[in-house]
Length: 504
Image 1: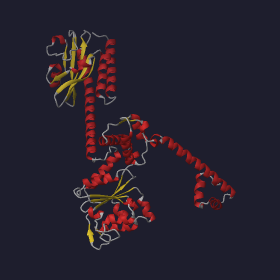
Image 2 (image 1 turned 120 degrees about the horizontal axis):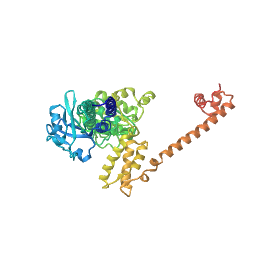
Image 3 (image 1 turned 90 degrees about the vertical axis):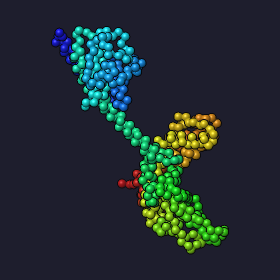
Image 4 (image 1 turned 120 degrees about the vertical axis):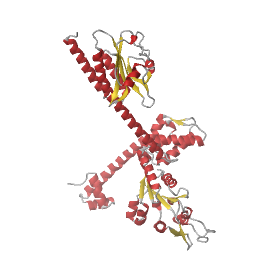
């Protein structure tokens, strides 16, 4: 018979253990780590040895120990059971707890882990881990048999513990299932929203890919915006080859690469004798693109005269060749691109507003490389693979060199990165790109930035001093000071305010 103090000590130990278990199981989603700590708590506070949690795989219907305390790694790996096999399997099958007072006298006890060399005077307690009637596995523990030990009390505590574990196991399974579902969805999207020769796993590029899929099946105009080298032509090709026009031609033309007279003949073609040297008729790009897509890069650089003719093609689907009178029909989808501020060009009158609105039905903004730095390592790997293959080399890149390339701001975007990697593959003597192999402007970028900032500050200091001197000489009359400096009064007012030179 236990004394009052002994009962109080046992009760306090139980409460402490349950509190520690609750804290441990709720600490994270790392199930195995939480359960191992829980088994340690059972040993330290309640004197239960060799605690194990064995979970049931719902697909294979097999059980294995996933967390234990008091067992070696080899012993844990041997702890595998089938439903109905041994004490553990029987508890899973029945859903009811079992207590074996002395495992040495129980033939059903398999000792599968081979962790009990001397099995006499060892009690084995095994309770199901159940959540809303579903048996997830079992919790078991050894107890060195002593007269003062109450196995019924131990069983009661283990039932409480198993209930806590069941909630944690189910929560962890739900979390992992949701995480896997999200990862699968992410993988599917990255697979779905990707195109040959276009590398981009960043969120910004995934948004671009999604937009491509949405717009491709329609016949609407698309205006690609972004800096030079961001891959506008690649995206235009992706739209074409995902569209219903994919079997038709894809014709690309850089409008900024040709003078006005040549650009006009390239776009619309010409008849024999239309100009000196026109010894035969020639189809233009719009004719060649009939039934397909024409990509007009640098559309912001075309003259107002050609803008009018392109507007007519958009509105009427027709045009005439240079020197010709026959109207030619063209079923063409136009995708345009520019790195210019077309809105500002419209305000200045250098770009027709009606053409702007015709082209800008679906604007698509391509991010600069510095806006999607997470894509740089993948792009580098892509270019290394391509150029290693084409130049029969096996060049890799060091971590230090990779970091330099990631940190660089890439004003030329993907095109600059591509050229840099090809040059490195061709030119380096060894097979590893090191920081010393990188272009000087990449390695020294921080120094250049500091020099630019210093120069800018020096210029501002000189400007401030000159304006201050002029204002003093002119009695702070801004109109006279502006004439003295050779600038407008408005410019002077802005700069005087900027440098805090306005007399109050």
